[in-house]
Image (tube, rainbow, N blue to C red; front, side):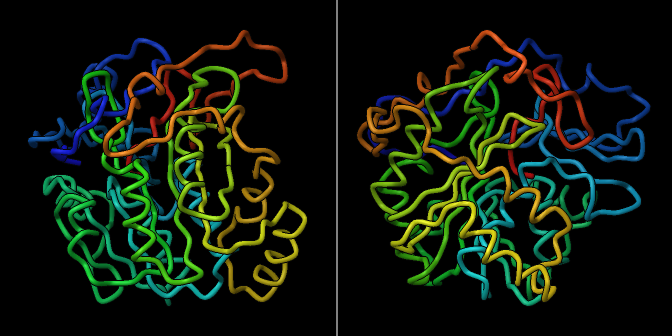
Length: 340
């Protein structure tokens, strides 16, 4: 996303320093490259290998799909966007900031055909690539605005049942959250465009323990709690991602309560997403450590760059990183969580 002219203490969220990484074009075989292009925001590469198509922005894996099934092969963290149906089972319209390879947009279209979805994506080349190479189809239920996400929210009059956040750009240190999309003022703006029982979900590149633990999750959690009554935390198991779900419902729900909500939704086939119950089990029982002491992010003070620097923790067996899998990777090859 494009920078805003707000006064801030730090510009953007730095990418997690998991390990030195090769550029996309050096990391993949030249014979696998289907497309390369450059926009004002990214160097974009699309490659096909081992039955999967992968989207790279600069040196970062952004999105993936199976070539024989465009609804399969996405990175694990995108599954947690499905959790929003637990707090609002009758979702009819969704706004998403960030497009990438449109994994979430395709999942909504496939598993929730009753829901209309709008997406704001600042990069016109990303919009073109998603449609040409990643089976993203526009229509009555899938709309796209090529513009900055905060500007879109500032100007739209629409009210949404859910807002999904997965907008990353290439910063000085790699993939980064645009700072203007992570402040208290932004969340207040988003809240004005949510239904009274609406929900907001936010993908953050980080972990809660082990490799690449950083303070940014706790700070975003605290900032969300200033605006939303309840915030829930889901930790991806095969990628360096945490998804925060903020709701306008005043009463908190634990895992047992959410399972009681989920069971009839799945049994009645209102929810048909295959990993729904498994992903629900990754709800974290406690908030991020020390979140109450973490900085509150505002348009006037957002030290997000320093907060995003990782603090490696010596690994014990219980903290060992997950093995490299097709929907996520170890620290040297992990999807960095930009738009799915």
